[in-house]
Image (cartoon, rainbow, N blue to C red; front, side, top):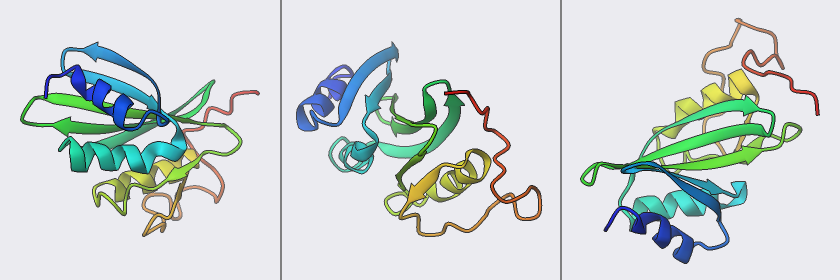
Length: 146
């Protein structure tokens, strides 16, 4: 598949899920998606376009809590990141850990350091913080004023 057609394919196959996209550089794309579309988008990338899940990264911005889910087409050398933004007052999204075992630890880490809830996570136990900081304390939160 030609590089630009990845985005076109996703927009055609899942038109309600994508809210925007950008080409960061050759073979590097970011697709802004609705949080409720994450499982469907990730499944489409994996099953139909043959991308593999690499990792996810999260941060808090003035817009809310943002996660980039990174996927790779190793053969073509392409990376697509699915980008979701969750509101400050309700940072939650469906877990990818049931689809990709590699999402398990990173989602648990994001939960502990940012307070993001991953719905239906198969193993929500603490990974890092047990005894390291108080319950309800999220060390990477910036506490932006609304």
